[in-house]
Length: 400
Image (cartoon, rainbow, N blue to C red):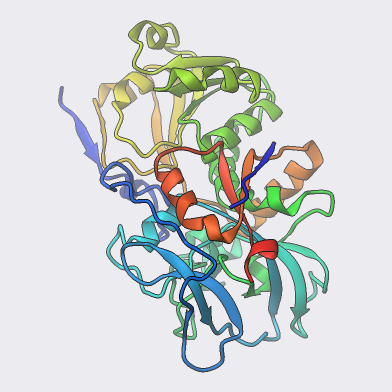
């Protein structure tokens, strides 16, 4: 669906310790950020890097996170590179966290965006997988060491030397990477993904972070086997994709939310089997020992013991969001052989498999298409959970 907008003894675990890569997924915020409303006009002041300025984007200049037009330089196309004209870019919580310096190491000017899709306009002489005119995507990272065991296994996101992020990362040549809120990007072909021709580009963008973030732990824990039971905590950009994958895999899907207003859409539009208000003790009690797997897509702090009680023996609770702490009683794991697992996005192999699967099974994210001039409002609305379920910026028709 597309909508268009015109303008006891407790164990404490820091969630990051569950993730074995230096990559940091997006949901670091939320409650500590105060809502601010910005309006950007087409007449915003243009600033730029010195020297050759061959790319137009929108950038934040400071921790206010306010985005405005910005000219900068992309590198020349190397022998192994693909240059693509960006048509669309999804809006992710990472865009909020990095532009507002939530983690304290953002490098300005900062061009966000790591759910990138577009059309190939030039390829290097060694490139074999892509040609001009192909539909291509770029996700959350654009480089890695290509030498470690994880890179060798197509799991570059777990690179021992750290995957280089698509924006605000330091590339091997010392330059700072800039993301998809821009007119084009140059990326090594290894980190580009073929978008099937029958899959709309605007819908492919959210798959490159939101989609792969939930796909990876589901596949890792064999949650693509019909008849199993899946619990999804949080119904946003990630959560709604977990529901869609779950139903496609033939799972019984239960959504856990604090908002009763989401019930009709969760059961009707998304096709979930159950909708549980997590603050309702009776509803939670009725779900005890019924789930094989729970994926927590939320970043709010929640009590983990009640959710662990919903797992069958040997069940797994996977974290893909970033609550400030994970707190649970040891017995919640020990007595049921249960596990808590962490996951970030996915490797290049997994990402291409997911894209191909979505095309073959007609799985599409629910998106709201906006122009680049709406980017600041979109980020504010994202903070306020006011989107169903992913903003996508129409770069091709609005970035001029």
